Structure formats: C-alpha cells, structure tokens
View 1 (cartoon, one colour):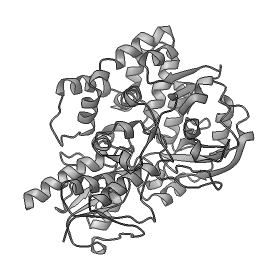
View 2: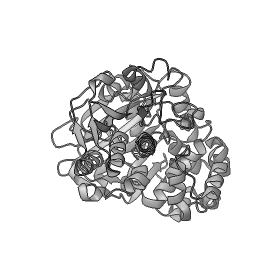
View 3: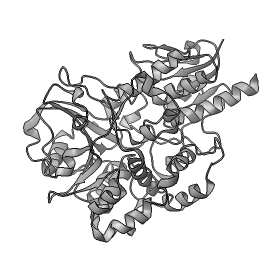
View 4: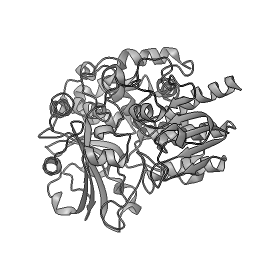
Length: 470
C-alpha cells in the first residue's frame, strides 16, 4: 500500500508530492492530461516555434516561494530570468509608473507628491520579507509565526480594502499601479484584505523581481516532476480519476482539484456547496512579428505590463465582470512579454505576447476586439504586428484545466473572507470529513498563484496524520 496518492499534477499537487517524498513516504501522482503542469504549462498555441504559456507566465510569488526556495529546482533545469523592469504601467501621455527592484526608482515614477508615501509603505517590511512571507503564506496556522509582531503590523495595513490604502496617495499614478496589483487575483478593489494582496506583489518585486522561467512556465513543473522522480515518486499521466476506486490503495489521498470536483470524486456530497467561483479571464496568446510598440519606453523593458488609463477604469472593469455580470467595454489588461529577456520563446526577431482581461464566470462572448482596442491606445500599430492569435474565454479555459470552473483561474472567488478562509471557515482547510482525503489546490490558503504553498501546507497536514496513525 502507498503512503500517499496525489490527484492532479499542477504546481500544488507536484509540491505536495515532493514534500511527502522528501520525508520518506511512498508517493504516486496521477494526472488526467498527457503532461504535468496544471496552470504552469508551455505549448505551441499559435505557430511553430512560438512557445506560449496558456495560463501563468511571470512569477513574483514563484521565485519568492518558501516551498520552491527550499528545493534544489535549479539542478533540474529551472532558471529564473529577470527583465530590466519587473512591471510597468504606461499612461496615455507616453510616461509610465514602474514597479522596479529599486524602491527609490518605483517611488520616483509616481511623482514627488507620492514618492515618500510609497517608501513609508513598503520599506518597514522589506528587511523581514522572507520571514513575513513564510508566516503570511502559512496561514491559517500550519506552524506558529516566526515573527508575530511583523505579521501583526502587516495585518493592520493589509486587512482593509485597497481603496483605503490608496488614500495615502495624492495622485492617480500610484493608485493606478497599486489597483492593478490587486487585480492580479481578480479581486474587486473594495474587498477586505485586498490591501495585503497589492502589498505582497509589490514587496515580492522589490525582494526578488518578477521573473519568467527560461523556456516557459513548463520549466517549473518539469523541475518539480524530475525532483519527485529522483526522490522515488512515480507520475502517471493520461489517467483521469472519476472516483476513489480508480486509484490504488493508499493511506492518504491528496487532491489538487477544485472543491466541487473533490466532493464528486470522494463522495463528500454537499460539503462544498457554499464555495463560490469568481469572475473569469479572457486570454489571448499572440505570435508577433516584433516587440509590442509601446509608446512608453519603460513598458518596452518590462516583463509584465498593466494596461488601463487609471484606477477608476480598473475598478469599473473589475466591477463589470465580478458584480454586474457583463464584460467591460474597456477591460483592464494584464500582459506579459517574455521575449524582452528570453529570446528562445520565438523564432529570431519574433515575439510571444500574452494578455487577458476579466469577464463574468462562464461568459461565452468574444473580447478580442475590446482587448486590441485597449492595447492600441498604449501601443499604436500593435495589430500590424500580429502574425497569429489563440483566444481562450471561460469555456476554453475550463476545458484546458478542470480547476478553472467557469473560467475562474483562481479556483474560487478571491473576494471577501474567501480570499483568506478557503474553501470554508476551518482551522484545518486541507482536511475533509473523510479521514484519508485532503485538498491541496489553490482553493486552499494561501490561494491562487504558482508558488506551491497550498501543496506545501497540505503536505504538512498529511504527514502529521500519517505519522499519528503509524
């Protein structure tokens, strides 16, 4: 009998499997697709030689992840590449606010009226960043905080809505960049804990940048899979699990799936009926005949570029998708251009480019024209450089990854208390009412992102149970 069977080979399932195998447990992982990866894959979606990331592409939380940093993933081919600028937010006048590795450079891009306010916001936390992040991403308490004082100070700043925090800024340049950071988890700006979301992304960029993996996001998954095999774990692909009986006997079953899929497979009935799925993304992968012709020079050097005129436009777009059930006329866009630092992703002189806006869960329309009209405002001539495009709305995203219910790439609405207390109010969110069944997907704390910490935290719950029952 195996010690643990993991279902789903996304970053969290792979991380949970590695953590258990490192501690001497026998582990087998089962994945429905033909390759591992989940939300961290790389594929030729448009033209031969153009390597796209169907979901995540840039990884500020990945390079900062306590779980990943404790593993020798560089030995298995993972190499982080740092753009000259982690992120830029261009404006219609040809200037841009930037999120730089340097706090001073970032503050200066906001203008003199907000430079001091930004420095006072982030500088107290940077010296203790690694400890703070480990404490923050281990919530709820899978371990006692290493620095409870700093965590409490962070909580005072981060728990209120981001609209409160942004009152510190007098001009809209800083508010716009920060609002965009919050929107990376598709969270409406007036939700609780959203100040903490934006602050975590900002601190992550200052600490270790906002990199892309050489060759694409598949490099993260492949490194985790190779490490797992070296530890003695086995991986079985093209293996769809519909019920527990489809799996070999084991002492623990760990699911990197949505809560609703777990309930169906494990026979947990209505255990997660109250779990809410949030707004979706409408994503376009482009093969381009050259770099994006951004008007702002800073945007041409950044790996990630946020696109919206101002904070109000971001708020309007998020509200349309999350609250009003309609696609925004002027979507807020998150874009990634890996070619600024990784020319291997496309043929010589060509580029891959990735952009998405927010739409309602399950929306079946086409946002392509709205996305490209928005891009043309900040990069005139963009359409002229498009060689091919691959579009994915909510139905296509859900078909590509079963965890994206209705196209929700966060595997659950990142709003209200559900941003932190996932998948339900519990001191042990990784366990279920079945004593041998556990949940490790981004539907559990600390939530969405390619960082493996949900899998890491779930693995702790599993090995404590296995040792206790031994």
